[in-house]
Image 1 (tube, protein in one colour):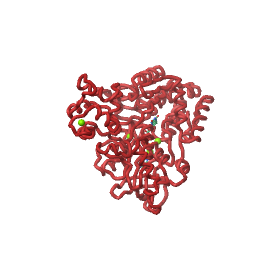
Image 2 (image 1 turned 120 degrees about the vertical axis):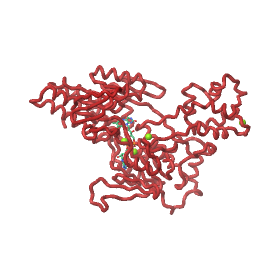
Image 3 (image 1 turned 180 degrees about the vertical axis):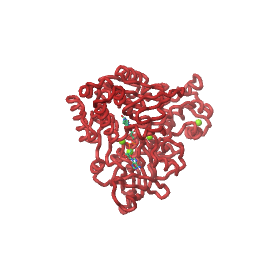
Image 4 (image 1 turned 90 degrees about the vertical axis):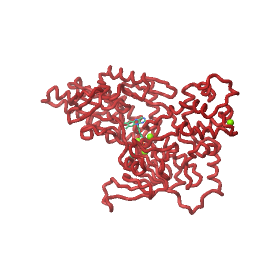
Length: 551
Ligand code: FAD
Ligand code: MG
Ligand code: MG
Ligand code: MG
Ligand code: MG
């Protein structure tokens, strides 16, 4: 993808041309990658490690397949089955890549260094701190859980972000049942212990609620028959509905299914305080109410990590939720630094900001007006640089820009259209409404990692940057197309072997058939044959023997 286009092909050829090959002695440029999640790992797997001196730094020496984390919370899938050691991934690439298990705690863009600290508890000099130089820095540290500074959340709630979180949740669910069944407890206490609260009705919270419901009704109910009728699962969501990022039909189906399953939905409530046994919330009119609970999982949003907040302050990007990059995933105003995945947001150029330049670019004969032919000749380049134009035409069912002009100018004959700048502006006035922030998903992170690696692989010499031009005038000569996200669809497992799937083109499917689609997609997306085999055998084991309830 993004690899076509004559300019690009010519560019790639130049690399293998001996005349332009850098001399043997020239040292390779240093690429430092921070993070081994979806974005970082995909970059590492795809970058040509013979062209660069690649070093990977992350406090986790493995990649985790996060979409299956909710399944780990209830033992449907074992934690070992969804992680792959980063050293194995590197070894497959010929072993030229280095990995340091450490956390980067400061980025110094002026001196092109990152400050790191090992977390392996060594008694190295300087508290295990060390410095790494880079020529290119790829920041892929992901996001952290956002508690919105709600008091008591860190102390009393579980999160569901890392593999350890999922393991802790699994233990805590089973412990709740063991505690609730003890003798000498009154009914109220048993009920409180078995009240499971999920804060946040997004995909993670909903999937966990569904998993938990299945685990309890399919496995635990048989093992703890005396207390299973006291169990309650509640989902608290600030918005009016759950799964709002999905199509309305899916969110409605999910809400109805949850009601049938006896999962309580409290939409329109915001949690304001958590203590060791009660959760206090507020409705839209700021009326407070509280419930007692046994175990709570907080999955209400993500925020920037401290290292990113600190870096944004240094480069005058404070007051943002994530690092801003351009469409080539370069951090704005920061030489040699790239950011991908959840830690970054890509800001797209607006057509209206560049409308004069676009007009001049298209007006090849400098007549001050644009003919249909001139517009059509420039359209491909415009759509590459401003993907919103193509999206806009598509979502309004227009076949080309002439339809757009007609819509703004009234019915006109194709050949006779001639637009001045004001008319051109009017025609394109609404296209920027198609500019949307990309979601914080594995799909986006992986595509960005893949794209950036392909840019690095195609750089002519290591001292050239993999970006294209920022200005429309140079469009015809661009070397690298801007990053473009391709949405492949989204799943929402709802429990009871039913899944909602929203595929491109608004194709929606809900039920058992999409559950099988889910199984096959998630099996095929595994990073290695080993994890694929493990995940499939976990699913099979669950079908035959149920989930394990020992902890
Ligand atoms: P991450 O994958 O979070 O990786 C960040 C990496 O950086 C980690 O290796 C971390 O250890 C490392 N790191 C952190 N701090 C530092 C530091 N200071 N220095 C160096 N390294 C550091 N997305 C989907 O598309 N589909 C799904 O079904 C889906 N399900 C999900 C379910 C759950 C429970 C969760 C939590 C997320 C899910 N997501 C899903 C979202 C997806 O996991 C994220 O969008 C994705 O992981 C983002 O990738 P990333 O590389 O930016 O960050
Ligand atoms: Mg990453
Ligand atoms: Mg990850
Ligand atoms: Mg992002
Ligand atoms: Mg003209």
